[in-house]
Amino acid sequence: MAAIAFAGACSERTASSIAAVQGRAAAATASAEQGMKVTIIINDRQLIATLDDSAASRGFAALLPLDLTLSDYHRTEKIADLPARLSTTGAPDGIDPAVGDIAYYVPWGNLAIFYRDFGYSKGLVRLGRVEGDLGVLDTSGTVSARIERFKE
Image (cartoon, rainbow, N blue to C red):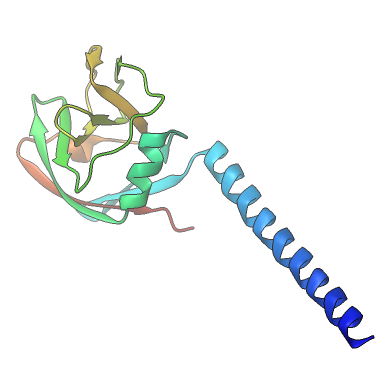
């Protein structure tokens, strides 16, 4: 009888564990479908961005938090080297970035945040989009930035 009771208890625990794992997986899927939010902190200003649901965006999110020096590139975007290459599985060959787009430039392996409009560029993979005023980026030279998961 004790063995039967023990087996029943194990089954209940196993079912409970499986339900907990399924709940966490469902929450993670819902979060990915809504887009993960990140905070970009520059000069005590916070910009909120929403990452796309893609292999490259998930790889970028796995690198967070990041402290980066963003350099100006052609008065159009701020760029920084990333500590690791991102997967571009399923990504198009390029994009036409809009103001506010966060992208990964595959040939150089760097992050780009566009504060001015730019044309189609092969090798760019969109990671997400910054919401709000990007004026803090519209400066010549470099700016220090911290990018981390959004905390409510």
